[in-house]
Image (cartoon, rainbow, N blue to C red):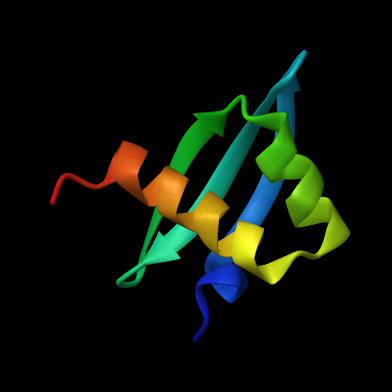
Length: 64
């Protein structure tokens, strides 16, 4: 499964903030993102930026 397909939900959580939920090894992780360029590019369907959005959420939630 591609990174962009692992983004489950994108919910508005306030002015300029979105809660993004991803799956990572069968578990769900949610982070609040305030980078609107990533969100806009996700809505526009730019695959490279979708992967960047996935990586940002993963880095905020998963301690490696």
